[in-house]
Length: 437
Image: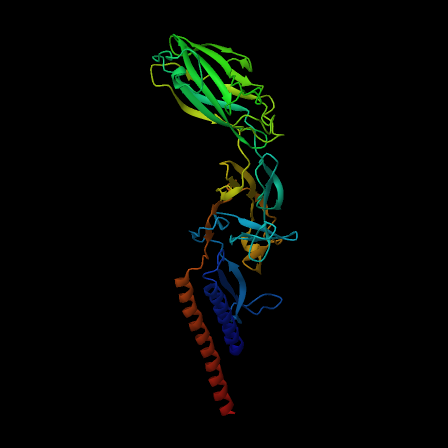
């Protein structure tokens, strides 16, 4: 029986060497999780159990358990490289067959789907037409490289002060070409439906105590009649209270007024494609202004004894844009950044967790399959509940501790030699007995 005991020890030591060697071989494999050989003793038993003086029959391999401890997450500089800091697995699909991984070395294929090195597609949540994440429905994540649709300007907000100490211009009759006929000019870039950029010029003229008039042009022309080159502007009058706040706002032709907001309803860009007068800077025929016009908010306009200046300005229009870069935040939201300074969510990475991670079945390629022992995958967005955060531009390294593995290698070798000695000793005893017969 000693031969069998020694042989079982040799087998166990060999398996320990195999597990340790596999750990060492994958020390540089991203997302790899080390394994541990677990053994149990063997006893012969009758139907009534083992006796109190029963000698063991050796050892056997009970399990090779995976250690899902966190590996170091190191920067790589590649935006599609992702690591998970905490609990969870990336979800991959091979024509509908799901697998799970901690290796986040992703790239795009010929169809712009996000895939791993084996072509499995990364799973996540898509977005609707407004860029809102559609939670709950897994889909193949794809980098949408199409142009961002332009947005016509619908509103302009600005914070501005008109100096109460200003004097009236020396030239009484306003002319945009005569700087002595106005106090200040402010220009604002706006956009039409085709993404063409236009310039709205506003000239501020002091008309009396706490009183100003605003003359407005679009691309140097009359906003409501671009073919007319008489340079007739839209006008509005503002009076201020003694504390510098707006008292009255009076809209001239071409404006409609709601509270302290003036809306330019007559602007029709693209009404001309060619004109005898030069320059003609209107957009191509077919482009239109935003439905409802451009609402110009004057509520934050004041008149204090400080220089006339615009301190803040916002308008909601933009031209068409091409995708210029991609960012992925800790919650896995993939955001496309466009050349027109706009951003849009194009998807969100989903992660899965399991009640018993050690019940997962390794299938190679640093991937695992769900089993009955692991339990059903719980899928959600990163940083939800106990799920970890996604770290972009980074990869999770192997969690193999090389020093420990080298020590285990020495121990496994010693175990192998000791069990071989058991067999050698038993062989010597057998030879002695044979010689006695």
